Each structure stands twice: as structure tokens, then as C-alpha cells.
Amino acid sequence: MIYDNLPVYKATYDLLLMVFRLNRNFQRDYRYTLGENVKNELIAMLVCIYQANSTQLKAVHLLKAREHVVVVKLQIRLLMDLKQISLKQYATAAEQIESISKQLAAWHKSSERNK
Image (cartoon, helix red, strand yellow):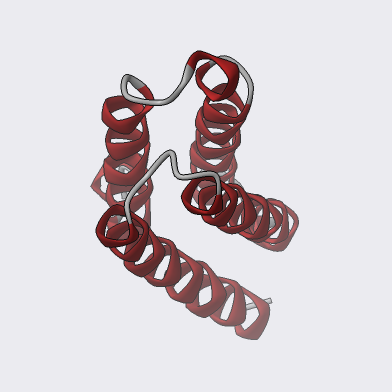
């Protein structure tokens, strides 16, 4: 399967696009620090998804991707607490993060079973 057709890849990419759009409205202090960090974490997560899809040893890459999910979740929450995104934007992002997290967990469980 081509990695960019994976639902988890698409969901992560959509979240990345959302963060890019939201980043324009962040205060300068946060745009170039926290905003950039969120984008970098999401890009790293996309790379982990690609790597997991293209190797037999998926677990290592999926665990790393799941670590990125935790960091992104924390950073998005921080953006809301710092009033850089609205509660509604936070809720939308949190739903996407939860979906990504569940998909990665299911994929990881499946890969462990297929060893």
C-alpha cells in the first residue's frame, strides 16, 4: 500500500495543514517557537508513518510515532491555554489527534500480532 493512501497518514497530514493555517494567527512569540515545534513534530510523525509502512519492523517506527502524538497533544493544549487557538479549534484538533492515536495503536497491535 502506498503510504500517502493510509488513513492515518491522511489524518496526520490534515492536522499538519490545520496547524499551518492556524499558525498565521499566533502571536509572534509563539508563531516561531511553539508553532514551529508543533509543525516539526507532525512532520516527524509523518516520516515515522512512512517508515513503518515501508519496513517489516513496524513496531519501532509506530512507537516513535505514538511518542510524537503525545508531544503534539501537549503542545496543542498549551496553544489553547495561551489563547493562541480557540476552544473550538482545540476541540477539532483534539478529535483529530485522538483519531490518529487510535489508528496508530491499532496498527501497532496488528503489527505485533503478525510477528
